[in-house]
Image 1 (cartoon, rainbow, N blue to C red):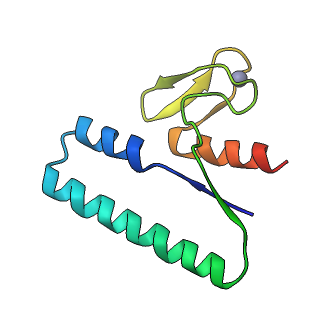
Image 2 (cartoon, helix red, strand yellow):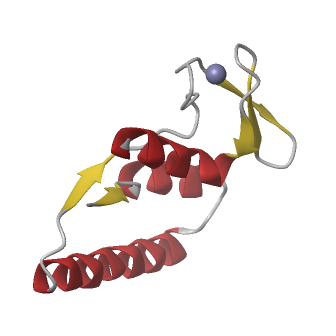
Length: 99
Ligand SMILES: [Zn+2]
């Protein structure tokens, strides 16, 4: 089972907040959508099940407490001491869901 983190809406918001201009934003999202389409076509072709699921990067995958962001996109949990790069937190969620 492949879990595809559905980042389109949050990713769009984050890119706007980071000051990406509209033309580049449209180009980036079109590329992302094209990649997801190719990926899902391939998964379907090979009979691999997949599921779109929003995987949080601000919630602890161990205890589900809100994470606090440190400099350098490092996320830390004040409750259980989980610590990871913000981009890797959703992967931890995918592993948790799979188990
Ligand atoms: Zn935690």
